[in-house]
Structures are given as C-alpha cells and as structure tokens.
Length: 333
Image 1 (cartoon, rainbow, N blue to C red):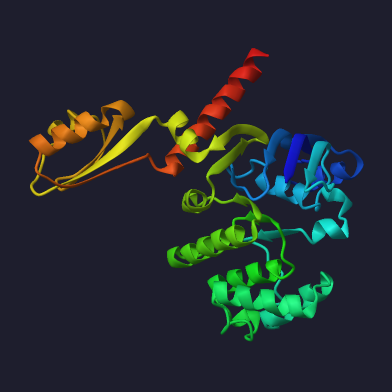
Image 2 (image 1 turned 180 degrees about the vertical axis):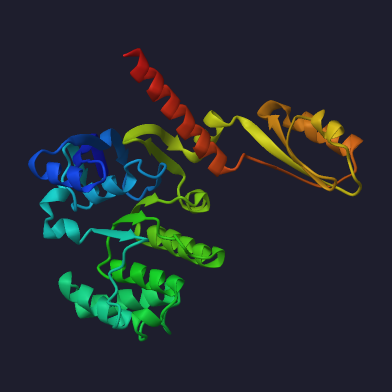
C-alpha cells in the first residue's frame, strides 16, 4: 500500500545573527544552511497493516507524512500510495487517504461539526445515502451524537478531536495518516481514541501510519514500528523485537508486606527503584525464573509483576545509540 525508496526532503534555511546591521546585510547577501529533514528513507507498508512511525522531535516524521499525503514534494527518491504518486494529488488518490494532525484542525470554529461533515461530503462527492450511513456509524463508534450540533468553539479538546476524526473519515479512506492524534488528551480520552482507531482499521481493512510520543498509543495499535532519527531509518520491525534488541532485560516489581533492605533486593539484580514497601529490579531475560523463585522464597513478597522496560526508556536509548553511531561515522570520515 505504501512504498518508499531513497526518500529525501532538504531545505535551504536562511540564518543570520540578531541586530539591525545583520538584517540590512541579509537584504543584499544571505547565507544558507542545508537542513536534511528526511535523508534517504526506505520502507514499505502492506495493505491493512498498522505501523507506528516513531522518532524524536525533528526526526522527519511529519515531513514524511506530508510527502505521503501530497502536501510536500520530495527533493528526491520514490514514493507511492496504493499505486498513486502523492504529489500529483489525483482525485482518486485523495479519496483514499486522510491526514489528521493533532495540532491542526479542519472544523469550522463558529459552526457545528455537522457543517464540516456536510462540507467534506460535497468536496469528496460522497453520495448522500452512503454519507448518511457512514456518518451514523462514526457517530455511534465515537459517541459524538450530542456534540455534532454544537459550535466547535464550545467543545472540549477531546470532543473536538473525535469530531476531527469523524470529519476526516466521512469519505471512507483506506489509508490513515495520523500525526499525534491523542496529543493533549486525558488518559481516558486517549483510550477512547485508540479503541476507535483500532475498530475502524479492523472493520474496513484500512492501513494505518501513526506518529505519537505516547508509547501507549503505539503499544495498543501497532505491532510493527518504523523508527527514524535525523531523517534516517534507525529500526524497522516488530515492537517486541525492538524491545529485545535495545533492552534485553526484564523489570521485576516486588511489593512487600514488611520493610526489606535494599542490599537484600540487590542480590537479585540491578535495583532501579527501592523503598521499604516496593522494589523495581532489572534482570537479564534468562535469569527471571531464578530471581522470582529466590524472591518468593527469601523475601516477604505479597505481589510481583514481570514486564518489559518502559517503551519510553527503550526509545530514548535507541535514539542515543543511533546518534552516537552517526557521530562516530562522521568523525571517521
């Protein structure tokens, strides 16, 4: 469904020091630096696949989504979405995709969302019967029946984001580009949005490319992740494989019925956090069974939990490694 080969997007950015003199000089002579927002990406996304597209701020994620949706033209490389060249912006292509950005909105501020829904129906030339049926499904899935008749400015952020999704889906797209769709939402609303996105993709066989800094979004929706940093690919594979590659350890959380000294806990593994009632220990994957057995036999354990390290730590370490490797390569060259 999505094919990317050698994709680049470079910008010439004018830079100057502050001050009136520098401003005047820049009128006659400007100095530019080359910014490589995307620098040689290669990956594919299969039809119906849900992929997390991850990276730190400035990694090139949003730029890539804009090129995939046709808003930006690549500097070089090849990309296609369901056989279409995105920058051509063909009508058939636009009817297949949607792009929702958590910090942008298409809803008309002083009008109710229902007006935007009807506007999008006309733009995409959706037959009225099909539009009504699909909108009823979206209203039911998102539970926005009480909100679509109110002016957008009177809706909460969570209500607006649900209506934004509905507006972007009235034409029945089969490729979803979601850029931080849960940004700023509370925990309960994030769960609602994730559940809806999962149900939509499963029901309609839609392909999803999701960017998010909330790792819960990625863990809940995306079995596969593509990670980029400074516009280059850092990892492409299953989320579980990423965790095992970067942090091949487990986290053992122990809760005690009586105070336990840190020294005793340290005999089991590396202590990440400790207080009198609870300890978190980092243990090599192949030592988990032995550590659990010792903890139950030697310590006053009332509860325990074994899990992978937090995804936020995994991603942070991966970014650190990729930058260190890139810096080493640049110094060697």
